[in-house]
Image (tube, rainbow, N blue to C red; front, side):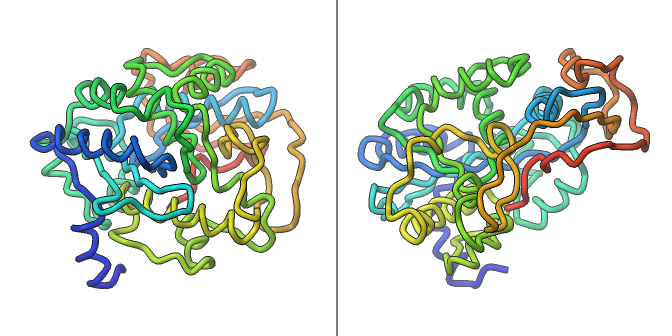
Amino acid sequence: MPSMPSVAMMDNQILDVWKNNLNIGMKRLRTLAKKYHYVAIDTEFPGVIARPYGTFENNQEYQYTNLKANVDMLKPIQIGFSFFDANGESADPPSTVQFNFLWNQDSEAHAQDSIDLLNLSGIDFEKLKVEGIDSAEFAELFISSGLVLNDQITWLCFHSPFDWAYVMKLCTAQRCMPASLQEFTESLSLFFPNIVDIKVLMKRCKNLKGGLQEVADQLDVPRIGSQHQAGSDAKITGDAYFKIIDMYFEGKVDTSLVGLVWGLHESGSSTGNGINSWVPTTVASSIVSGYDGSSSCAGALNGSGAGSAASSQPSSHRASPVPAQESS
């Protein structure tokens, strides 16, 4: 639990944006984007409700199919942005902007355990029903904020395939993600040319392991606000990034690590035991949970050797794919 000083500080550091102050939130984004070119991002979303099944050429194909299957059916709940200069100094308060989207628990698909966790973290689901931001309106304003298609911005994230998938879904106004990882990567690199995923860095760091909060604790990075809220998680992501590059990378990240999203473009062990090359394997998965086959994008659930989407049934799983996204 955050201490009372941290909660009080959240009011100063994190601007909480709803439909009634959307223009204020976007104005703050535009102002910060002009001066602060390191932006940490985090999303909160309603969990994972489906798993693909079939035969997949490698773990990358499995992970992207899993990502697409869920993002095509679900909507984001929050997105947070936190701004830093090149030295890791936060912008003057509020340095972090958190957007709350229109989202109705009674009608939107979701994983109940994820909603329970977000509810415990302080997300107001009743307020989201009536005061949340329309995603199309957000996207229109965000595209012109100065953050998108800007090669001067470096984006900071932590194990972020779902984060970027939801952001791209908003930016492109496409209900269905691209059919292949290659197509998605090309679009992502166009909209957001410079992405650094902390989990990719951790693979090259001795003794750093775990989820975002565990890593922050190892680095003695304090949290402002509540865990599992997008603004707070974005802020601690940025603070952790600058601590890591100072401690392990002499202040600079090699360009070869830019643009790699952990769980999509790179995976493996990040427990501090050295760099493990990813050896592609054949994956056969037959797990599907919480999915009724109603999505027009349902083909995403099928691997190259699969039939059609199945209802929720326990079955065997001959592989150990990387988890969809670690808890922050």
